[in-house]
Image (cartoon, rainbow, N blue to C red; front, side, top):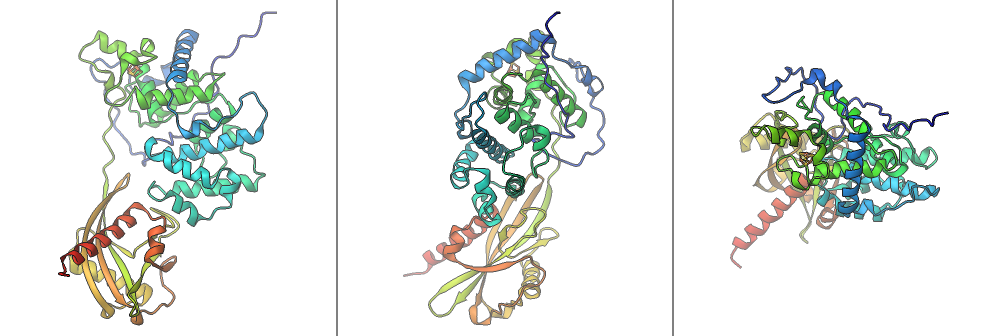
Length: 450
Ligand code: SF4
């Protein structure tokens, strides 16, 4: 009997969407017109294949060899485990490290993530430690990384894993059942920690595959993303899926970059369709792939921020009022200074009126108790889809006039002293507002003759 031929292609569950790339509500888009020299449209992307064992084998071997020699030394890669060993604890530790790092890396640069990852792992070295944490602690640790929903999902996911026995799910399908673990993260954990031969597709992989196969279809289209997952599934190495996936992403992050790819140093240049096309046709560049797509227009929001400081008695101490944001939506569950959304640019009278209404209706704070009120400045904070302009004021109130009664219409609130405020994990925007107030006070005191 002839020996069974080894299947050289991984099984792929095609996800509904690429979770690592920016998510936006799909709008009907006109079909992209093929540009001169381009050979594909969305209509025929399903015909794309890597050509048999020669092409697939060549890419796998070259990429893994390059990765072994050039991979970046990153802390989550130092959590070692033995692929063939049966130490389940070590595998869980690896899975946990991959999970935390992958969630942190979404929308955030590697260099920024490293110190956050190290601090996180020191405080919560296993999923069991994390499951014991509070949302306050997790938000504090996450402060400055942005997209705080990611931190909340990590905590909720950890609690779920521990409640269900404490062992990390081992397959993509089981990992997907954990809160906050999407197709991308499930693929990364399953392939890197548990050696499951599944692909992983992020923006880097989309770019590399679009160039290897000269795919000019819109890379944001669901159909294109689906097919790139399918192609990545053909490529993934069956013996070293985790290393292969990391190699493909590493290639996109370091050599096959969006604007200036280093094709002369690329380990898969011999198999690259875009490179060979650009050699045949000098009017073409490898950077013509993937097709550039117009960015989603940012929404412009405006808000008035009041840094409310309550003077405490004759000694000069003071406290600041912090309000908890709603548990859903932007910066969910985080502490901030009292703020009010505005309809657009607003003058100081309108802003103060809006703030006064909010402070009065929510806290019973009255503007007749004001010791000092100053405009501190403006600050623009950019979120993925939102450009938020904040008008920041300092509002100092007399302690004896402040009625600390139950707030209406806010999730929660508290008064904290300067020391506590300085040590709290605050979002970048809140920290910036506080620093602006401190700077304003410092500048003013420097102007007063001693
Ligand atoms: S040859 Fe150039 S364009 Fe092609 S995969 Fe390598 S770096 Fe990217």
